[in-house]
Image (cartoon, rainbow, N blue to C red; front, side):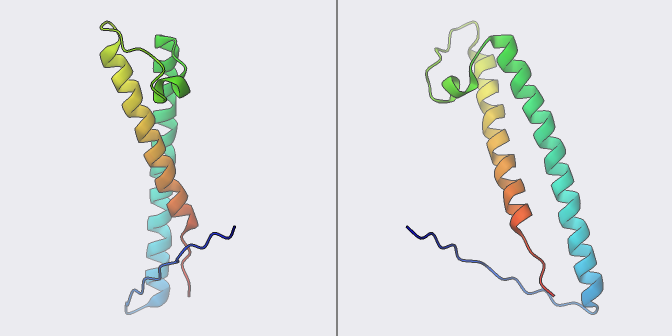
Length: 102
């Protein structure tokens, strides 16, 4: 089986290509740092909530954990944090796959 992904190319015009490339590189690196820090914070929150609730996150996300009345809001928060974690991981992966061509 062969997987092929279409690569998109974006052109940006500017007076100084080196300045534009430098600005784009800096912006991408800054965004990666922000997402990496957000990932760390979100992972810590997921781990703390899972530990506090004594919940296996994988089982929770598969719907195998019953939402009791006493833990419902906390379990929903944990599920939301896990979804946020997945989203951030996807964003970081996309950013890391970007290439600035000269």
